[in-house]
Length: 612
Image (cartoon, rainbow, N blue to C red; front, side, top):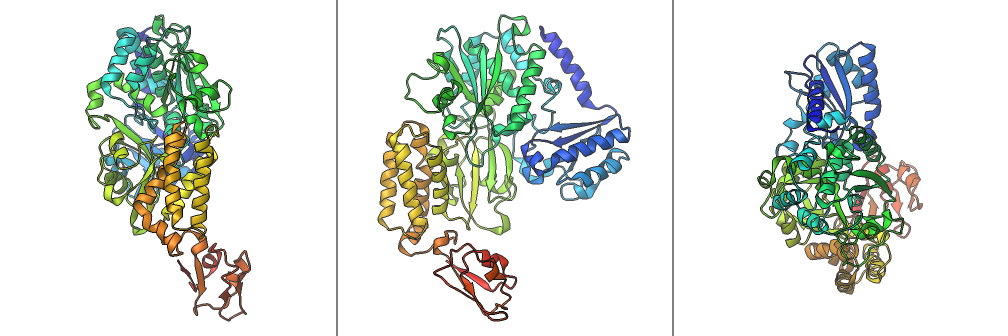
């Protein structure tokens, strides 16, 4: 593809296909969330049924995640002039019925739709406060068909940059947009590019950081699975802006669907001349390769990531020099994460003022969050910066299940902190979250309710960072391990009041002396939970109890006179702590009981009570 006219001709043809003047389009959510829920056999069934029935005017296509992972597998039927029909919780049997009734006869199967009354996902509160920029194509296009991306203005931004703008002008637009890195640090994207642009070198590099490692985070994976060309186009624009002709996508090997779709997208872009030599007939050439990561959390840090691509052990190094000056193989390098890159084409096409029209003054645009944990409507959400935590948790997410009371939300993954109900009305942006003791991070948002033990939550996150420490610096390698030992001591019922002071002192030393952000932020979950839930820590170390009834060492079980002597509890106890005769009340030996709760789960008469 050498000219803009050729791109526009392909766009026109692709639009004809998507406009469906006389037929239907059936989209099956085939991101990882959909596939794991059983979408693949649903997809195959629909294709077979359409073929067997000779329904030549019906397209069955795969698509990415629409965000509402709770309802997977999801099938959406689009027909010109009619409201979209969304089917949820699909299986092969339901797919066959939809094919027979809806696709062949035009009669939707209402009972399989949202609410059983032909609602679409867009009718739900989950979507009403969202604004989709990064996720604009996810769930709408087939990510394995470059034509569908081009139909929705794909590669128009690259053409505009190469044919109408200088590299400096591209950087100026990015600066003016105020786009801040969505990988966690929130650094100005335009400023980062401007640092690399003037540096002279025989080679420069653009790297996409797709090493998404936070527990509960799946934003980058979903973008790569649902709209991979958005990332490729943005990398090429960045390459043009800084003078780089080579790009690498560093992606986790645990993301096989994303990797496969990236490979398909790169091959398609090369075939059309949108990657490779002399793109659009200009002197600009750009190529992209994929590098698989082995799942080390520390490789999300840019210098560790660079070391990994170079074939070395993923370990951070001191800065300066910064990658923009001396990065991959000693050459100037710009690293942006997936979500950051997915904004860029839209900014080039629509302008900096458009990007500033939503979000906040210092944090314009949107943010994608993986909403998980104790939440009714979990999934992938994209909201304007400045929306409050309360709106996200209660209006978008639907609050906590079972009417349970909200307790805290962890933002920023293992590097972030817990935010309590006192700060639920805080507008979400980079600076506000830091001000209340947390951080944006890459976008994980884990909700906790009254049944969560905050000491155990801190232990969980610290256990993760201890395991993921690269081991290069002593404060992180040894300090976090010592903190974890103290937390294990507290949650196992052996803690002492002075342990809290020891935790705080250790945490401050680790924060101030660790080499990279992994160690510097590792104590955050501990410090934030002590700050907001010190009473829970005190209950563990001074009162010998876990208020939430989570930590096993504090749990005591008692069999009441409701016991019928069925012996089911005794048979299911792993430590033989329960004794008694058939048809007589049983008893639990507290010395043998490990607090696993197997007895409670097996009792059919609610005869066993838990005491915290």
